[in-house]
Length: 343
Image 1 (cartoon, one colour):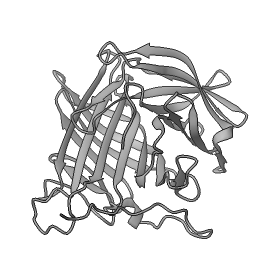
Image 2 (spheres, one colour):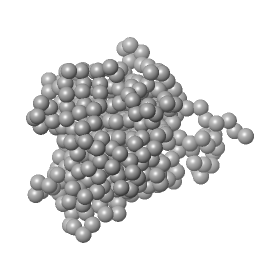
Image 3 (cartoon, one colour):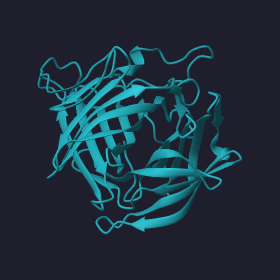
Image 4 (cartoon, helix red, strand yellow):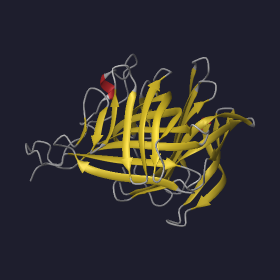
């Protein structure tokens, strides 16, 4: 019997080392788990706000990677897509998965080029992303164009996820992506949209500690051109196990906040009638001495992905205020509220 595969570790980077680009834009198949995560606020021509999410996951399986068969399921590609439309009252979403191969599903090395049937996310020579999803109830065809530098998370792209240094990932973000394109909703003609997006790319082999149950994460495009990323990992009791924040201000200055400087305080909760999960959909986030208030575009932004990655989570468009003044638009992700999260 073949030995189970050994996945690449995620050690801290050397003092003068950073993530290598452009290679980091592409896939890292030696690591167990990886995702490209695009979220954003878009507006129709008549001024209606919508939220969207398009995610591609790559997961290395326990299958023998030395197997030369083209049918060997050594890598799986999973896709999630969602549209948050308050007029609909709940999240429109779709999910699919396939083994990598035969040109139908892949995550290529070298640059961002991920495909799952007719869904794709591709990075062009100018740094912009072409994103296309055709799902039941909606389609998305978007172009995401950089307007700000990359944001390396943690220590130059090495992001701790727990007290144990083995719980870590390599992680960078692309905030303030100018977004244009079209959406088509069932029963409607295609509509032009514009707005801003946030893209996360993260890869790891053991991101969560054994006693972690889930996380809360937010990526915010701030109105002044800055960017804010905050996350906390929760333990099985719901208490903070680890946390971190990165804030790049309007002048481009980057501040990092450790676990003792970051907190999430629920302000209002919403319970799903489908799963009975209870989510803190409105919350107060503290980074150092700064307090941010987060409120959802709509309460029901729960995504049931048990057919693909086996999880139920809340992923939705939220607005951000600071000192009572509108500060930006963001996406908030909350996992582990229906059942403990496993990667």
